[in-house]
Image 1 (cartoon, helix red, strand yellow):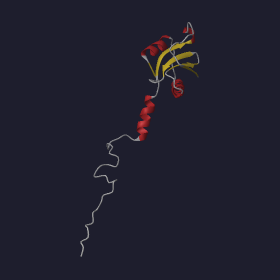
Image 2 (tube, rainbow, N blue to C red):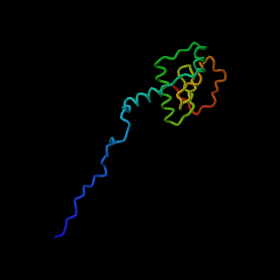
Image 3 (spheres, rainbow, N blue to C red):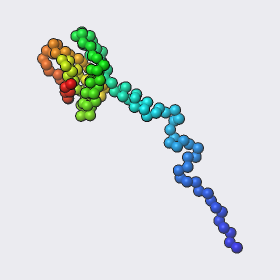
Image 4 (cartoon, rainbow, N blue to C red):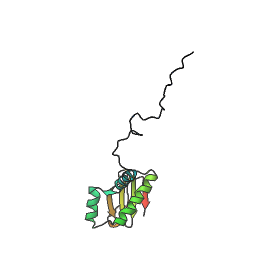
Length: 125
């Protein structure tokens, strides 16, 4: 009689060998938390220079204004802008789109030459 070859149990390729299914760290943040942190980081902030200009001109920016500026910055970014002039009522804001930073702020009374340089787009609110 011929001997039969022993049965060999071949493990499937997808077997984990004791690892987690995606080899990811166990204490990772959930998607919602990561998204919220990213969105919070996308809110515009004022540079020291812009804050000083607003204080000198007795201008306050409301939360609604900040929301509108955020939306304008988001739209400018979608169009590929890097430095944008955002016009909000009688206020001109030069915003670094990538950093979401208001670089300077000028009200209409202080716009001497009415010329803005080093911008690549304008958003009118």
